[in-house]
Length: 186
Image (cartoon, rainbow, N blue to C red; front, side, top):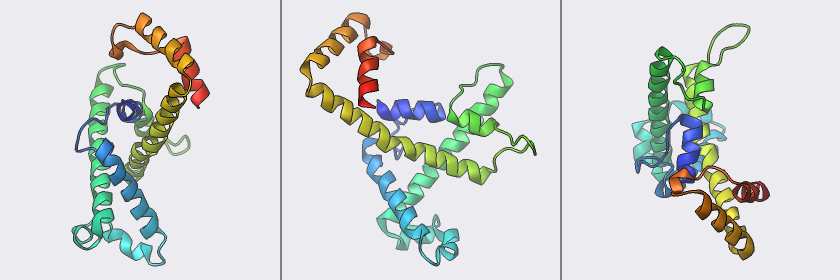
């Protein structure tokens, strides 16, 4: 749920696809990818390596972290391509575009030059958006569940509110106790 919610606010798509690095099995690969980028990015000769970081050579000689990084980069690229297609389609149909992070990145313009972001900048930003929420959402949800389990009276009130207000889990949007749990966790 967290991954899908996080993905929908960032890229108008959930990350329930098993090929996504942002699935339970993919979170470790995402972390591995980021560790790889940080490790290699600070080497004295990083600029020389940069052209080969996502190449077939690194798939063979770079180890698992390099392969995870390539997989994550390819996934981010596919998400960017998909989001650009959605944005182009919605721009021809008045008012149907979802106003998520990607929408604003794709439509932002420098006030002085009128230019938008370069494609390489969009690639980097989309990768950052995908990775940024994975750990923070998981940590926040873990903390919420931890505090609910350790405060049974609050869990009981929340359960009562949710069961009396909503017919199914897909309807759950907001409520006083739910808002209180979110606020206190954060």
